[in-house]
Image: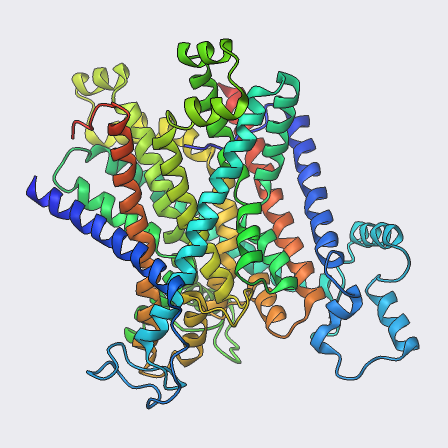
Length: 326
Length: 274
């Protein structure tokens, strides 16, 4: 198993974070400039119907930070990012930052709910699956998990939308709220929850199968340890065995997988938001690509990558803290 | 036992069918199906999987997209493990200082989420198969280096390896004759894992409209079906590519399990007692 090597110290974790973030920023810059042709033409592409004259061109280049030499452009790009300026969206005619501030909370809420769900289901299910190792249902459990793991996230989203949204009609098929909804208080909370059920479930199911297999492996290794033989011989009840012996010990290994979980969740959110027409930066990015609004798409993918890196840093720090406690 | 054998035959058969399909598809590329049928027809004797909005036979559409999707995934998986193998080898045989530096660099690259930077670059390029392959490999290889380097370190402590080195064997010979054969089961497992990931990511990028739209792909077929969700025809428009994609990835998993067991056995490893 390739396990992500976690940093051994706080400065190490922060240094690694800064390095990767720099890499992402450079990648964003280089990707645009490595293309053949003038970056401004690439950026505006099909969006310009008339060929701009020199004055308009200069204004556009200034707006997108594309005048001057390559070095100047890079410095200006980094400077703008440092001030929180992510670029100018062509299709929304607004700063990318404003759109991100508007949309990011939805994506984060979606991912947070799904992560908690996947974490609990993965850990609990992994322990249960390990306890059924060697039983008659074991091959079926494994085959089911392998099959679930083989369905790409966007296919899962479409199938869930199809079955629960269109066929059974138990969940809404689009949006985070009903159109022109004016509910308040508890009714609004319920409406929000009702719309979020399917996207959250899709994301959670996608990551649960991976976590579950992982927790199962860890628990299987635990089961052969002497302290568990003693515990079983002592007559520890099945519930207490799971709660006090297996789950806490499998927890550390599962927490160490959080980085991979977050990465998968954020990438999965792009697909899930697209399929369920749910607000968030993933769908915004896909829409931006569809209308060739490249400055917006670039800014959003940068934010998406930065959010993943930040979540990973937090996970690293938590693991460090758990380790420090012994 | 007979059940397991039948299951094995099924897996092997699926693998052979897949390889045959890729070969046939690359040797005799199917033409894009004609837009001559009645649009949005349910499956019937004339159109086994129904037709899409353009009146194209869906079965032909699925088959046309198969060799491209499959071979792209296979090539990306093999290339990913190949690159990771070379980097791991470099990290192991070069002086310890440089080796450590390489592994630190790999850690940094690993923190990059594989799919998001690929989306970023693809949004500018709309890559065709060649560039898509490069993209998929570029963001996937760092994840396998650590495991391979650890394995190589273990293999390097073997007597046979030291003896070969004592006789003056070069780096290429050592890698080819002493390291790769012993690591075969792991390499097979990692390759299959990467092929699955590459197929998923390639289909995902096509679904988002980030791949060259002229290259047929199951992901792109799903993206075309999505706007017709409220039409009854969505059932077969979605199930055909979704089923093909999921079943292919699932059969890769089964083939991988079998290959891994076979290569483990071929190396004189104990057969799994279960």
